[in-house]
Length: 275
Image 1 (cartoon, helix red, strand yellow):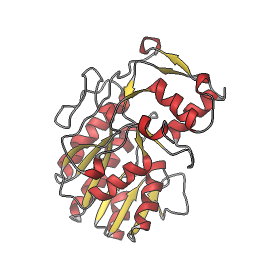
Image 2 (cartoon, one colour):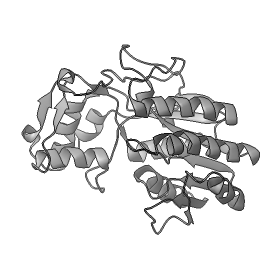
Image 3 (cartoon, rainbow, N blue to C red):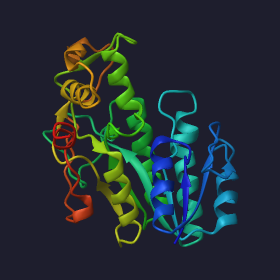
């Protein structure tokens, strides 16, 4: 298997590369401004055609697109247009394509969301991801569009972004409160990566929800991260969504209609509270 990974120096991308190598796959990947010893191509997704050239040069059997921007002026150019180019390049090579999306494509007003529910985002990042989903599906109709949630790591591994936010808050390095009425389905990065690599060989197209099995509040999630890494969870400060200066989805609880053992991912509570 020849796999190309975009965003290879990122948190998810770097885990994907390592796990694919362990399977004996031939892997090539790209980065933009954070090169690593596992990435080979420097690609600016704002430069139309650059990613296509990199993918064409490798001619992979599959592409997993993880690269994105969340809160900067390049949100549309990278998160939307970069995703479309990745999908189109895969389609031209008849390569399997997996596009990483987000639970933020939903407004969080429903009790839960299935793959057939229509995106209704209320934040700019969610809007960009929803537009990217539709464009990717048009560019590569056979692509899998994976919606996931907050990604975290085991205490024995280097903290990811959401782990570090909680740890910094508990250590007093930032003054942040975590909402008790905001619900997500965080996913352990090792389990998400295993599911994504399993998905490469599956005949699946369209949206797929790969998230933790049960929801947890952002407040309890932060407490669980800190406690699992030996910190004091009582240092985590709680708050309410009404305190947020901008609208935020309240209940991003994703369910999946697809049954597969690799996709039955554990809840954050099951992982972190039983170490």
